[in-house]
Length: 80
Image (cartoon, rainbow, N blue to C red):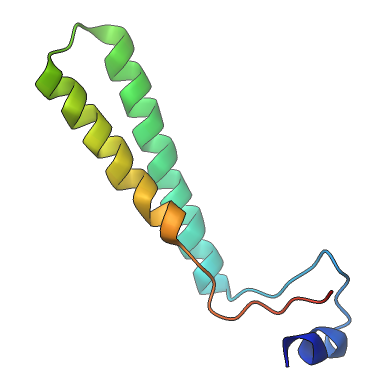
């Protein structure tokens, strides 16, 4: 089905169709991750840390990263 739809849309091997809402959601998740990485880098460079503060930084980074690692697109149309 997806190959047929890709052919109808005249997509090349390197193109796919993704719903704008799904792409926007992924962009938002990546932005949150970028902010977390920036925050953690800044916090690590600016002061001494306890085990608890390092754990808090790691948890914030993981919290921001997990949605990106589990993100998926509904039904991308691929052509191969």
